[in-house]
Image (cartoon, rainbow, N blue to C red):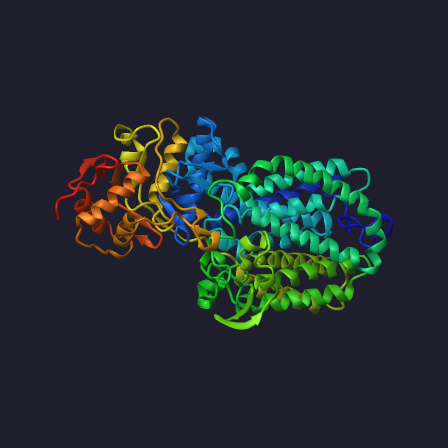
Length: 620
């Protein structure tokens, strides 16, 4: 194999011939796979493409709003300057540490022309689509270059890695986790490090790739680095590879040193902001013990698949965006059969590569189970290795269940290697091919993805779209929709994103959907710590809860609005919630009782606020 730490003369696993050296016809498989991957990605995201401005992801409207906000913020940065890793445009007045969130800095800059032209909504679905297609195509190229000879085998493995159940699940809003193309790109250059006399060039390129990967999917980059370490460490320790590994070690270390210098230089400020900047935090804003893989989930089918559509889906995931395994029993059986067959047929050199791949799959499967074994929703008393890793840097901010995404890629590699063997080596009988083909079909057809679910979202009111708000709020002043922006009610955050994308005068918002400090013992939490006025309107929106408003409530609201420096509050005619429309009538009742009669402006109900004065007491 051409990508391991082995001297070429000693490797029994030779380089796969580069397709680019065999004439123009070699590009046809590439173009075919790229077209298929792009078509599949467009199919999965077609609900958003039908109306990017009017449709929202049913299962994760909050993350979609957050990434749309970042895309709008990218345009704001280019037009106004500012810090890509910290902002006070959201969560006024204290701001948000974007480095401690998922800042997707490369995306927000690279796609800023499209964002200016078509809006954050179109940029969002474009990136989501290209991520899925690029992941499949990236894995295809990696497999084709380094592991398999048959384009069909590489295509099968690449398409599975790009559209595995876990990545379809993350297509519900996660522009970071759908960027699966980062992994094969990093691996490509990691596995080039042993090449003699090229350590400087490869180290520089890998350093740039690492910096790009960190800016897009830091957690995914961590997983990729860990998988690389397990693979190379395992293979280098096996008897057949030890001598070659020792010979290559100085070159690899030199390349890694260059990588560290380049990546460290490019990421010095983002890393400082991430670990020590204002509004940072330790750990994560999510419960790691909750976001683990249930053992049963590996045998179940995902909800957005043909099997799920037929009623065989499962609810073992923490939420619909975290169905990271869900391979189904047939695929798990097929994966084991592939592993056994490849092991039996492997020659020295390839055998060591297989053992290292198996080690990666086993390590990440165990890590995905989290600190305690969970089976079919029951948490056992059995402690697992992750319990010893919970407080270690990087592991303390990772969600264990997501380690199963690496297992999906290992399965994709096994499928590709086995298919390559079946298409290359003679079989004892025609029936053997038929049996394998049937096994692949039974395992993979039920997993064929369905499009992500979408629904209509509240249209942007003329008050925002036409810039009418500028008559009521100073430049850089604070304006908020009701209810305040949270993961469950993100309209105000979305509309701020659209305003930033248009340029010109801007407003800030209190609250918002992000990760910030405020959790126990310095850990993170989702959003800002709620104030009394937050709860007042959130309960009305989500549950239709109303209550008599007294001067105590007005005094609390006056303090909260003064803290945020809010200059105006508005209620649109329609409000989008995480589970659909909210109780707008209850919001209007509470707002009118608290602030008085509203003005009707630009299609919204508007209340002007004098910070520190409104709402005034009424002697009740």
